[in-house]
Image (cartoon, helix red, strand yellow):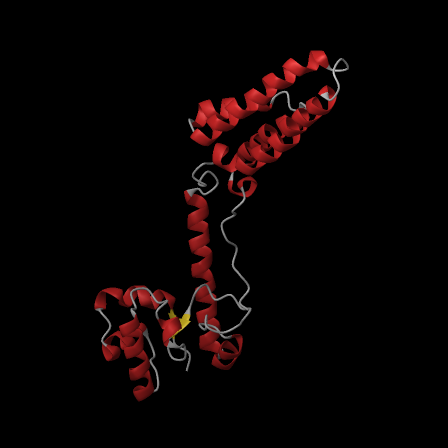
Length: 229
């Protein structure tokens, strides 16, 4: 299959800047680092910060468990079963609270998943895709046979070569042609019919003129189309 291009990270530690990611990890680790004693405060602070119902309910639950823990601790050794209950409460506050915090830390520190996606990164990603397309077009112009072997412009076929999202108008099926900007199913089917009659196209301008594409999408199609003969 076509090797996937780098995608936007999906885990909080990847999508957040390093400083915020480190802070989120520290926050999430506090329950286990403090043996559960900081758990209610960890969630309460987050609830006050984000004003989130889930965090509010979680903090109330952990505060209740913490109060119960404190009330039972003086009776440890005096009543049977108290130590076991205290142990269970500490486990919930420390381990479960820590796992819970790690699970939601993205929602607390990066609720919209955008903190690590700056304009510079977006621009760089678009530039990289454009460069890949330019290199793939140059290769196709110099060696069409190699381009076909590499399956440049054929997102419908398994491949490894990265072409930046090109579509080979002269060989790709309708399902791939619709990936071109502004090309609908109807237009893709028309391109396929005209292609069968004419043997293919040389450029986006010829494609637009012969297949009757709307002029306003010609420049966008040209950016993603390749015409391998």
